[in-house]
Image (tube, rainbow, N blue to C red; front, side, top):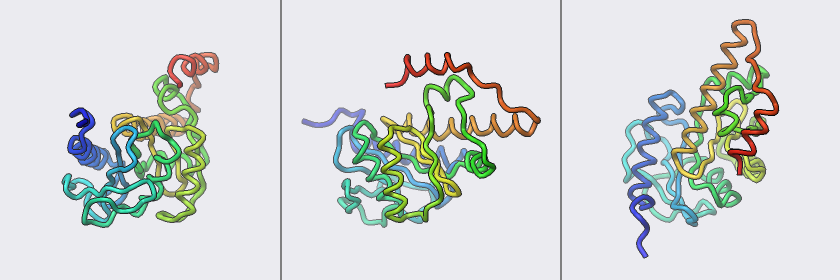
Length: 217
């Protein structure tokens, strides 16, 4: 049976390309830095951005399809160096159908300064929860992929990679994109508050618990 148009492979590839351009324009990925992948819900294969191609100029035919071991299924270009990191997330998070690895400058500045990404807005309570933070591991390595896999098993939607970037995990590309964008917005609030000589006012714990009950699965 043919997949509904909403989840067709061509539509999925178009959304990856669109997401790449949007994140580039927002400064969350660079010309050749960062990577994006997505799959049909429940699929055993995923599409990912290629290595060393400008993220603002990608076309659907540039994307590469891989299986959950990171093996090439379709495409002619070299897949992202972080292909194993994406594959690991899909293997341990069956509900996840999109992974975005971005290079959020303000989020990285926040953790580099020893500050935490706290849920200082209602939206952050709902969408970010408690992010995982991993120490620096060399990009594109099995060690990094394995560390992200272990962190992903604990269920976060956001994993922060010190001195490197962030990993946003979502049911679809919209949710994964919302995660990385919100991480940057919340980081901005926390950094600006500290620059003004004040810590951001926390949301009362009872309200955080209420957000969890209402919105967390």
